[in-house]
Image (cartoon, rainbow, N blue to C red; front, side, top):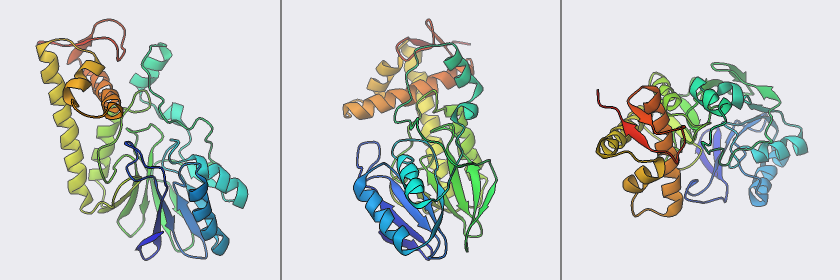
Length: 295
């Protein structure tokens, strides 16, 4: 466990992978009179014991979950059950999906996705954008930031300019956007939303603490816009599917990275299709070819 601010401690779960870097960051906010556990993480015994040791010595009052992925939310259920601590989260994934993603799902198209989704997760309390949660000597504002996942939330520590950014902004790479729950349009909107806030230090779900957060978020947005232009440039040469495009962009990378890249590419393709910049040869699918529209 590492103390990173006066009333914030960090425990990193032992679940390293190409998608989680060193592991999932769990944060302990507050002091002995009323702790808030943010993103308890995966159902890992070693990680559970670390959190349990803290709860046994100090009083915990809240569990907050940024989003319902298996590396963030499962341990919340176990800790809540064992110590009678309520869980707070968005909790309404289906409702939070964008209209285009709902349309694709209702069309029963083979679009893939749902990687790492915690389908068993249910909070005790459902949170809304801008809602304020008050604890003992701490207050948090809820910030709805879909894009990585439709139910994704960030948590801003009021009067501290500190934001728990989950996976929408990570400290080591840009995030995975995998339809139907990942959405590039929502992602860009969430980045713009964060750019308009005053938070200047981000504590992410994976990777290191982010200083000068606005500059970092602006770089993430620029990166995604460059990726979009790269995809359009590739499609101007000839029609390709998402896997073929990903192999051109992420060549010489390990297969898990190429697969994740293909999901990001597919998310961009859906967004470009919605904006009438490209068309699809057949039903919308990562397997079908997309073609640039000359105007």
